[in-house]
Image 1 (tube, rainbow, N blue to C red):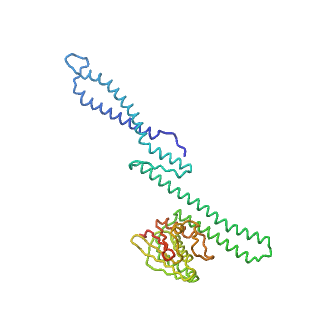
Image 2 (cartoon, one colour):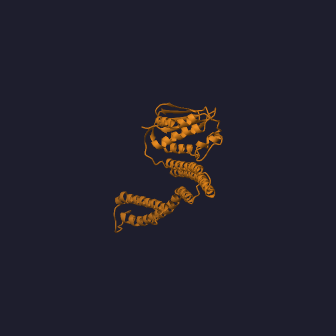
Image 3 (cartoon, rainbow, N blue to C red):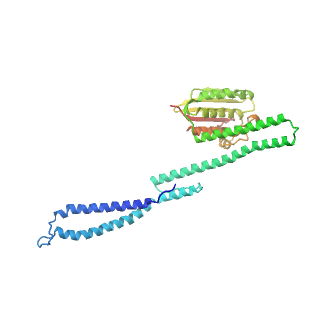
Length: 359
């Protein structure tokens, strides 16, 4: 935005210091005049026998006072300029860092030394902001690269199928349509997941009272056919867990967790337990499932977009798009909650979601 040129902060502080010093000097002279000279007899004609007198003191004091005022003004300007420059030096470093960040270099940090004061607190806050922005930008770049790769795959498959059908008119069209339908369904699911993830990251939703226990029961009822198909025991336990947020996003969060626990389970005979409870001012949702052992370094990356653990067991019809836990983390973060993933010693995963309880 264009602004008209004005006085710098350093010049303003300099003028303020000099002006204050000049006013203080003037007040001092006024005090001397009011409480000293008025008690001295006045002898404008310089008559003998009356010494000292006001006339002589005024004519002697006035030039000296003028010199002193001029000295105070110059001293205030020079001293104020140096003092203001020293005081504003941290602000100059913060300004330079902001300009550097504005050019796209987010790795720069101020790291201002010294005891804590307003400028040091501003510097630390600015460094923290740069760190968060750098991490967010890196995450978005990685996400965009992964998303473009994931979307390119179904489009490339669709084009290949259409090329094959064009070159071979005798090919079974029913099989072609079925494969195109599966590819397009996967692309649509990926697009919807990307939109949901973006919505959770923005945090633009209306909050209302939601009971996590009801959402857990609904998710279990919806995914019960999948559990029966894979011969997995699905249990929902616990009590009410009221939270404040978006019913749609929280429902998707619970569904993703339960579906993730079912899909990445034992080939058959596994178990999934969903537990909800209210713990003081926190509503807790725990989803625990059996399955193969997971190394901690793999668990730490499962919430990244398009991250799929190679050791985890899944079926082809439920391969997913790699955004399940990423969406969960985004929803939890948007609701000011916390998400913990802990590998079970016997194999499988324990996921714990903590959200602020509804008033």
